Length: 292
Image (cartoon, rainbow, N blue to C red; front, side, top):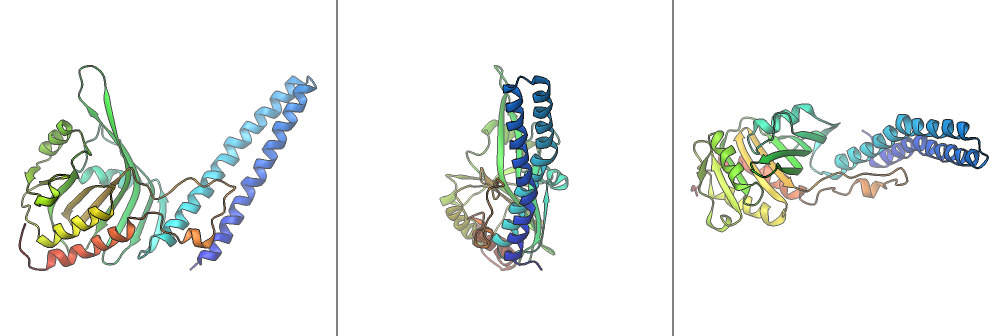
């Protein structure tokens, strides 16, 4: 398997070609400027158009590919505890799976976008994660009121596990009337949330909402450490987590070459606590406990 040092060297080689093309582009634009000064307008226009074509056909896609490669490497080395990670970029399948979990209202079918997606094996679970974006509409007589949800989404599937169907939402995440209509449409009913959590969280269930006391302890601990935690969903073999307006990748320009140390730095401060929460769930629901 490629080491982090070898990955950094590969990234350096990958950015060489687009960097050279940037210098060529600057030369083309400089030539176009000289031609304008020399009143060779037709030739200047040709040079300018050639530069534009070079940018959109070669430089821009190769720069994006480099940025994506840096993001993939940082996720691979920075999200500790995961194995066999694959980076998929856009993930159409996950875009369809997120609505199927019935966590958020949507403006229309197919409006969920999942990007910077990864698949990996965690400790006892199969993880799929992405940076997601979707929108929903708040009915208004005056004008269209479109609300957006953007953040990082995790779906952990744990074999031979069946969780109660519950959904925990931070109170301010969704517009109340849209939220209540959406949840009612999908068969949710309000459920009891532990007293110390009820000020900031709402609990909804589809059927039996009984969960062990240990779950509330683990959930409260995660919420204290992950201030962007906005939704948690349990259903069947799945535990899903949504961090609102929190992302694990960024744009990397061609002028920046991350060091092996930077590639190994966790891109999401909340990840160790999320991983611990996901690992604890099978133990929590397997052990006999007193329901809240």
